[in-house]
Image (cartoon, rainbow, N blue to C red; front, side):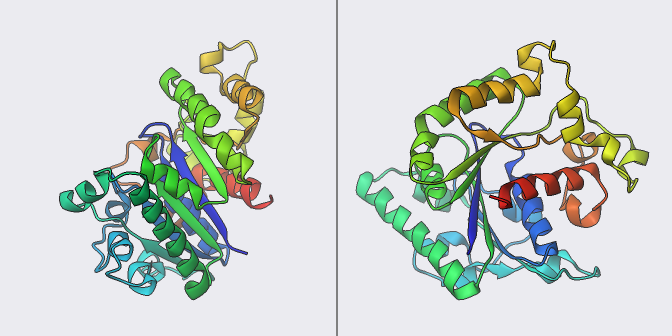
Length: 292
């Protein structure tokens, strides 16, 4: 059975792309065949994350100008250049960042046009599963409520709604859950909230490089948060409140690590620094997702 997981958010800057790429790499290291797909059609960035310009884009597949084997390319050796290859495989498909390509999908052509695009995304998913024998499809989506976002979420069976601890994001996330995600849940999609970049976790270099990261566990800190902390500063109260209102489960929160957030280029921390607390905490999150 193939698991199709989409990452979404109310607004940009919540770390979707970083989480999606690292999740895909971590699953590949566990022996899974993973396809990482950039469906953030309006502001694609996954190609920049991997520093690659593919011969064929996902846009070409959607325009019937390429097949799935040309579009979804094997990135395993590229990522693990000089390193021990994982037992799994990591494939990736990238959206075209050129202005003309973005404008083409930006123009609204009515409901029939978007139904056609949805059918193409369903076909893309089917082709990846049947022709490539993939275990996991990880989708990076556009933030907000837009046609492409809704279509991308519609082809996934598990949805992760990422957010940060600011009032606009919290209120927007609740709106998404109440107005959009209830439909997905109704039709069987499993939905999670993932709170990212919580303050108070920035780790010094000795801790980051230490194999013992238990003292910096996001889960441990999350459970020890003072219940008297004001709601808008307390991740436990925020997530508990959202679950009470919407019924949606939340995953173990991810810390804000300054070395990742403010680095010139974060690239697959789980591969390059598997002992980093971020890598350990992301493994916790993956375990929470795939056990259901």
